[in-house]
Length: 366
Image (tube, rainbow, N blue to C red; front, top):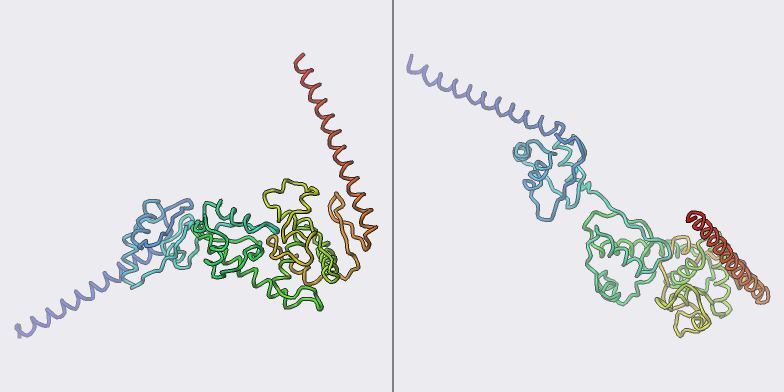
């Protein structure tokens, strides 16, 4: 009887041990889960970078050294016991105060990286866009020293001229994003906007392709920044194109001059030999002259119905439009007189200011 009771007693003891170990394991797992969901130790935002090739252990150690994670090994153990291998998106993360390990892991999995921004202003050139990208310390420069042709080939559009092909907008990106990636996004957005606007164009336009509309939009963009004028200026250019008249747009000449332009156009400048000189050549120039806005694109394919053939700046913002050359010439003379008057007034004010400064200096000296 005693001999048969001994195995039963040993079996009960082993079972009790298993139950105890299970309870201890469950308790340990509960403690690990509690710590996993509990608030973290940092009372301030902690910035950490997840680099290519980083392991979870390496990032957790970094967070621990920064004071954002109290028990990194316990967190790793909890994830291992649950057979979880969280994926980490590369980038810079701002870990909020008292963030739990669970929240931190979710941020890594969801790629909640800190985003920077770059703004491409309506009407800038492609060269300006490249310079902005190159100057941004958070953009990874991969195109420095490459030609326009090489850049377009890298984008998958060999043979295309880059001018006008990129949509001016504010772009958000994670630090370390390449300049090529941002250009690719801007290219796709311009292509999408151009397709959408071209599909709803007015009938009987003298521009016959989306690219010609892009060229016209770029000229409209440089001619005026006033929303209410764009369609009317488009109407003037459309009338000229229909009649075979040269567009006579100063911004195209300025684009042709490039770095030789110093703020004013001379008579010699207006005769510069270039396919972009719309005083010498009829029709549209060979490419856009800037990155046009959505409003300019819309105006190019929805020109105002007008009989105007001319316009000139007022010198005070906006333009004056004319149907006849005689009326236009009179408006040009008025504009020139206004410019001269403004210059004389500016000189008079400068002389008065200099006199006041001299008197104040003399009074202080005595």
